[in-house]
Image (tube, rainbow, N blue to C red; front, side, top):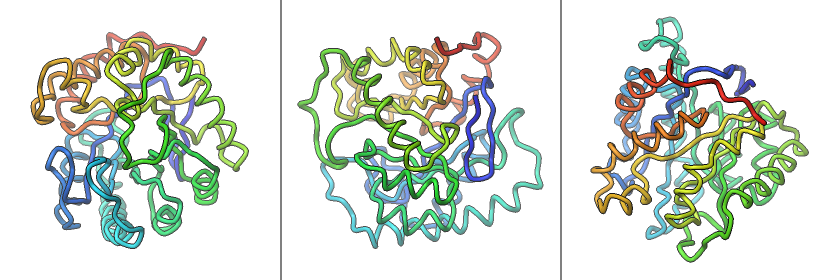
Length: 295
């Protein structure tokens, strides 16, 4: 299985990838965001030096108790960071990877969902689009196809930035199976190669604790799509609910537990805040993981 992302190619099976989270905003739920491009670039470089294979940059918090920023504002936050990251990445390409086996320089993921924003920023860079909109139409897929970027399709319902805490599923794995089959068809019809697609079951998005725990338990069933699966487990509400930890900053041990469960079930990418802990955990787990093939 391959992942193609704007001229870069990653082959699986391999040690799972770590995606480090950089918030180009001032309302991150973990309080780690900044509107200063120099600060966010420094955060990205630190994560890269700590072993991140992908940097996932977002200019708008996913918190539903904050209004959306305008398309112009979101684009204006992204562009200085993208240009600075491109310059750093070009220079870093001459160096050896800080961690053996690391994807180097790291891929840049752009975490956004409105096609107008994607059209404004994707021409300037980004190896993949982390689309939290659940791909309601083919516009973002067509933009990724135009620029050769990979597309990460996340499961959810309704518009991002709106609460969906009422949504529960009688069988979340059956829902994911139908959803991803449909969205993969949409994306490939829009011009994407299957090798440009990543799937994300959307932990905590339009799901309740039993749904999230079911995904963590049964996520290996998603391997049938023969696409890389991203498991976004970092500091999630399901961890806080399970451990009675209201402060997201206290949830890193629970994050590593979920990461371990996912890695042992064959998941390919983990989106995290605490990169050194995730990289260390996956390096220890790597020789213990049996390659898992789709059914």
